[in-house]
Length: 335
Image 1 (tube, rainbow, N blue to C red):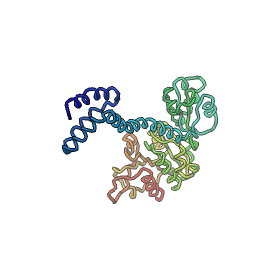
Image 2 (image 1 turned 180 degrees about the vertical axis):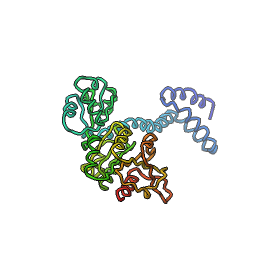
Image 3 (image 1 turned 45 degrees about the vertical axis):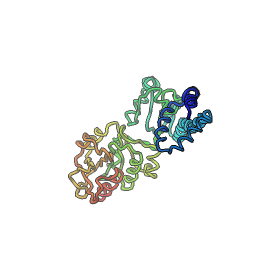
Image 4 (image 1 turned 90 degrees about the horizontal axis):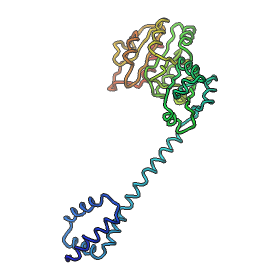
């Protein structure tokens, strides 16, 4: 390569390339190609230099063409993300949701079971809704005060007017009603209480087992628990229609009330000192089932009269919450 040709390529043509090119990583690519030239033979390197001298414009355009597919592929990612986001919106099931002031007010005044309510502070403190919402909260319905923007996110931009609710698949009864019903229908009734089980599949499976073993009712707390949603009803496979459920504001206060009415409170834990197969009490029982990862909370354990364990013989150290509940109910109802 002569000096004049080298000057033309490194000077004018290189400036033209920088002027016409919008790729910020070009310098990295040229450095990489210069390092790779060390692996070429002298003859191959000379041929490449001759090609560059003969048609530098074509070489510049060809390098741009090589990068175009990469640049185009980058522009597709936001479009794909938008499509996937839209698909997630379409898959969201709002069949059990109601929003809007008038629609929600009519639902609250009707007899439809309600699982959860979201509202802004303006709605909660308004004369029209305040007494109704306070009444539902005392009955165990979870009511959350959220911002307008948060409610718009939950409803995906619907005209919610500051309030929305999710219907329940079954009505609930008060704790007093559950106690009266259980005692009048069985000398030694058994009730299941859930502590921190937020997976609706586990709640549905426990309901199915509880009804199958003739338990008289189920207690779920207002918070830290899955409600009676469509998923729960589906997993329960019809058992929810035949089992009384009480949703309480505070689980520990509910356990104290049950103990005052002659119930023994039994907690399930892998650290329990008494094997469930050796437990012989036949009094009215409340079986507390905790979440699989955290188990029964420490405060709830203090409310328990007994902590029972399920002896495991294999290498598995724990059981799924619904499986542990089914095994326990089988042992305790067979006494």
